[in-house]
Length: 121
Image (cartoon, rainbow, N blue to C red):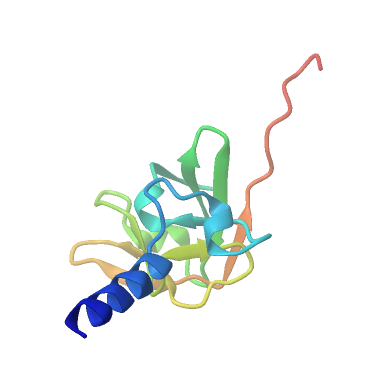
């Protein structure tokens, strides 16, 4: 009986686990998502939008109602999420953190940044 219980628990946990380096498709069949741990850089787009670099070919834009200059760029900026993945079109539970002490800025919109087209193509 104990073995059966352990086996059932292991199966349940393996169903919840995702492999390391999980791609955006891991969060949903057609959803465009990334993990906050995968963010490699931040830059200002305009007064209310910040661009996040996840990889050389994947960048996302997060919109906040406050001014981006309020994030206090002299200190570390980070992104925090209530779930494992941050998905395009679903800003629920996503915050940008900035300042010293860090202050949360609620994200109101998440979108994929347009890809640059090489000149001469």
